[in-house]
Amino acid sequence: MRMMMFVSFPVEPFNAAVRDGSAGAKTKKILDQLKPEAAYFMADRNGRRCGVLIVDMAETSQIPSLAEPWFLTFNAAVEFFPVMLPQDLAAAGLERLGKQWA
Image (cartoon, rainbow, N blue to C red):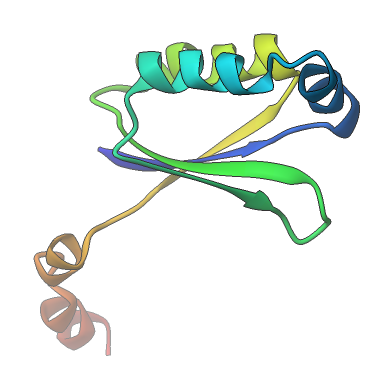
């Protein structure tokens, strides 16, 4: 199942990695292991550093292998949200559901 991972980095642990020059290498190591379909980094609505990754999860037992690198490396918070492509939404049967529940 395609999942969006929202990774929120606490300010000081990530600042320390930036200061010592390891932030880029640590992030690359995690991304190389996770192999996300897409990865975007930005500031969240509260001005904190965050990342949004799209990953494919075959089963929920993969959650630790996806989240622990962020927890252990940056003391980050991680959230998972199932997401769909437009073709997934088209195959969801919204028309049928609309008639069933209208």
